[in-house]
Image (cartoon, rainbow, N blue to C red; front, side, top):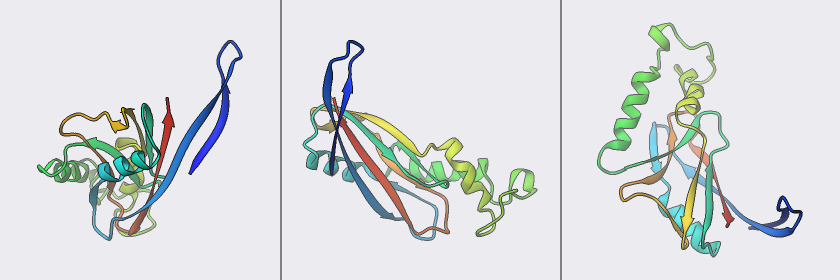
Length: 158
């Protein structure tokens, strides 16, 4: 889907702005997980005819986030382990979470976006994500109550 708008420079000259947007449905199931989205991002950029610009990856959920990290070598599991230590299911100091609906410990999932933000913006150069050698774009989902997540990809041509 392409959206075309008009923006102006400080001098008042108008120029067209094109934003391509796609919503993905990602099945995360009923376990905490880190899902590598890099391939889906690359496919989206190819379909959008991307050259140079910016890719925004956003999860419109109060209990999920987006991270750029190495996957496949254990870093994704290390992230989940670190989050379990920082945000224990039993609450800070075992005192429980004030936010109590959902499965036990679900309040921690609502704190997650403060540590793993729900969006990131990445440079696109020559139609490719300008990531480092070992970097991947990942959905981080610790909420076992929601089996399917929406991820919104938006490409702004530069």
